[in-house]
Length: 289
Image (tube, rainbow, N blue to C red):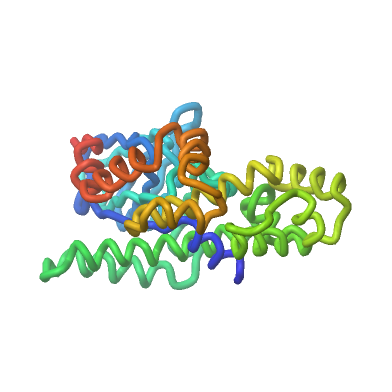
């Protein structure tokens, strides 16, 4: 599996378009646990982020904010900025080694990424056509655009450390593949060191240097991320805990709560509700003037 496919498999992305048209004033975005994609088609747009200088855009541009990064957009002239805004929800949650490996934000002129402008043209054409199923089609198009942005990030090497670096490392890539294929098997440090064909001490140090956390912590994060995907598929907890490597439901529940701050059932209730209300929730938070 290549790096981009691995990333997409780990994230489980859902997109929701919540604004399309002319932005003629100030809009604030600060939804907890939400990423954003903003597409500027025409006009002048100011981006304002905490502790950063204001950035002014005057050409068709894609703005991608992967984490809950509070920011404001301002249509900087009388005509406003023609744009589409979408939320990006990650079903496995914002605590994820894949997300940690990505930059906080990416600003891409559409002309800098081959083919990206074509997807954006289709997106705006769909917005203007106002046909049945428009919202669903636009959401899927945003997800395709998201994949293209990630492809650019991966191919341009904009994330030199963390998971993407590990996926490019010959020994660690084998270990990560082994972990994902054997979540209910032996994932002890000794076994992982064997897979990497390294001594135990060398493996632990190499793993920490590249990924920034201990092998055991990475294994637990990966197991919990996999469990989240199964929970959202309504699998029984007794089956989930076995599939992701826990001997019983109580041990799984303790590990899940330590990782997320809530029990599996509490997490399921919260995220099911959030998924059903994502567009309304984000639209309420986006104070478009």
